[in-house]
Amino acid sequence: MAQRHFPGETIGIIGSSLSSAFLAQAAGALGYQVGSLVHESINPVQQFASWQEIHSVFTEAHLVQFAKQVDTVYVELGLLTSQDFTILAEHTDLVLSENLITISTDRLIEKAYLDSSKTLVTPFSMVTSLEDINEAVEYLGYPCVLKSSQRHLAHANDHLLLFGEEDLIKAEEKVNSGTCILEAWIPVEKKVSLTVVRNDRGDTLIYPPLELIDKGMTTGKQVRYPARINQTLQKELDRIGAQTAKSVNLVGSLTFEFFITSAGVIYINHASIGLGEAAIFTKGFFSVSHFEACVRALAGLSLPNIEPLNLAGVGIPMQQAKFDKVMVQFASRTDWGFVFANISDPSGTRLEGQIVVTGDSLESCDRQIDMTELYH
Image (cartoon, rainbow, N blue to C red):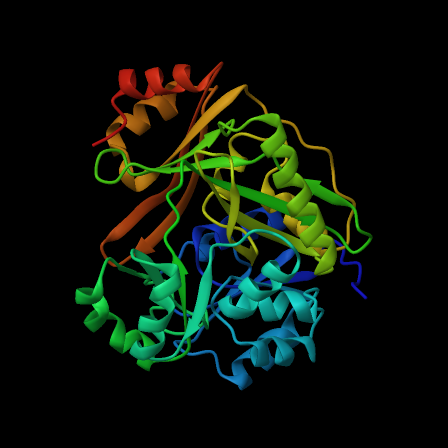
């Protein structure tokens, strides 16, 4: 049973991504202390944390020590094993259900769970050897994607795209390091992110879907609202999000990445605890960000209503934009969103974050981007 946590108490955050940094910022703005556990001293969370512990490896002793100092804890995806979560639960308020911990630490169990709940996932097979891959390819076909099953392993997010037998030599090291998943390659028209936030009373916020675009070397990644999907598809995404959140007894946030084909078929690419890069867009675009809503859910508070602040928006990562052009707009605009964190290292302080270009339509946003020459 989740507990109530009030301002003045400490929320622990394990992880050092930008999303973890903005979660710490949101917790501080609501009056909470923030304890931070990270692997490296150079990180964006430090700016917003009340205190921080740094360990290159998180041992059981480190986790116990950290858990005893916080009242509840948020864990970034891919850092801990199921056993690590058990250790945390013995010493602090861990709001994650056993089902959610299991599917969030193991991609194979995640796929099997989603498949059994009658949602469409990309066809997959468990593989532990090159022989397994050869057998799986007979029905998955080429190209296909090889992923580590355990998310906490080193290089677990370095997926291999296999185009044919000539690529199998690259797969050998990965399958030898642990159980893997081989997934069919799905030709997709759109990639969409959806975040569901739910508290211990079952109150649920489903944020509007955000379209994710990666244009490679040209303009890189973008987050765009509104997602270019029809109302029928949006209702189905909402249904899947609400149903899954309820079935895993979610307390906190759950982020889905959907693949949508040209025929309107929806596949779940993954469903994971916490908040991804797309969440940063919501700080500059919605009345309540993913981060504030997530803190409120973790603390056992009521969830507010949400609404977009503009008709359309495009989020651009700071590292893809021209710094001087961004600063010109920062100094003169009040209609765009600027979501920044400072990262200090021996070479100086740098800004990371996102610029949220807003307008009456996506076409208007694109024209503004071109006119202001934001891209390198």
